[in-house]
Length: 483
Image (cartoon, rainbow, N blue to C red; front, top):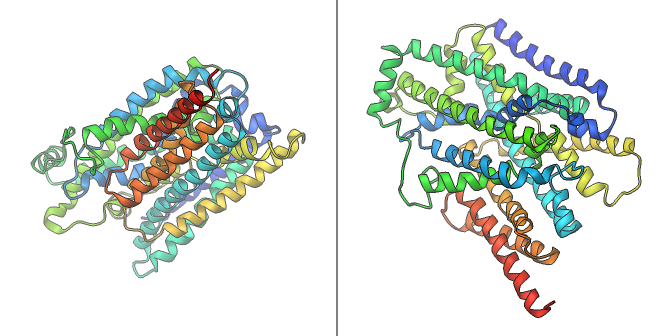
């Protein structure tokens, strides 16, 4: 990498902060700060959803899945589940989001089950999102560490990564603090174009550097069975087989895109369920094409490095290594900026909205909107610092970052989805919902810590346990106290 590359990266980070300041001119109320005035077009929301899903974890880890020893395209089975989950959300959940004036999705739980259940779901969201996005920060910092290594091979990379976590986290705090949700959405629209251009440019360069080009890479990939998509093995300990992919992926998407404030808040920035559903379904097509592209990059990296001959490097490091050592000046900086772009899908505004609307305002009542806006700013800063802390603590763990982030999401989102299902099926009241949710958390944590069951099943187990226990308690209470 050359000076031009570093200037491109620095210019991108400065532009993100400047965009936050520009959008900050209109952030005079909590409605504008959290929902962007509900006038964002559906196509921008669709791009924002894709950018939100395409974190640095995706950019780095998905190519690594195809590159890794025994790696292939079976990850796409999970994406098929993602598509199915989107259809369910559009048909079942979406109309409820636009009944009344919601700020967060958890307000629906308040209407059905009361304040305690809502507070539990909101608290779980804040905790899960803080951990998951701390991991996102760490992966981005690993890329910056690889960039620095290209300039100074003897540098202490661990220290560089820790410092990078802090710098990137601070940039995210600043632009979210000033620009609110409107800045987050429109920056994500720009980010989508940046990282798609960067990924395409990187793929072209990798193919050109492989002896024999793209056709040779396809031949190598075919010989190593890299293009296998379907695996119908019934093995609950494997993440990427058909059953865990389609069923687990569907339930995971129903939870992350249907009951998670991080995504639902984007739908609420439109003005109708029709526009929101259009944005969600369109994003599914883009996400499928995108994951196929990232997996192809992994095959290209395998054909370039030939780890079956020369030895494997950690899967999360192979793409950053190529970017910093082999891309031409200018394009290298663009791709690293694209990886930063994927990391800048900030959840801080969603965390602030959830804390203020679901946890703070029910306790501290009858304050003016200006007061709640100030509290939102404070929460944005605190949540950002917490995510930086998670990134620093997670540094050094050996598990795939993609698996770690998705596992965290699956652990928490399952019980939350379960309580929404109780509401949709009109089962039980506050006691049944709270008990079912608590049981779901206990069971899924036990499965995580005490078994080898793969993470895509965590959401299924957590949600169905919550639904079953809540329904059973509801039926028992009805028998004890018949109408």
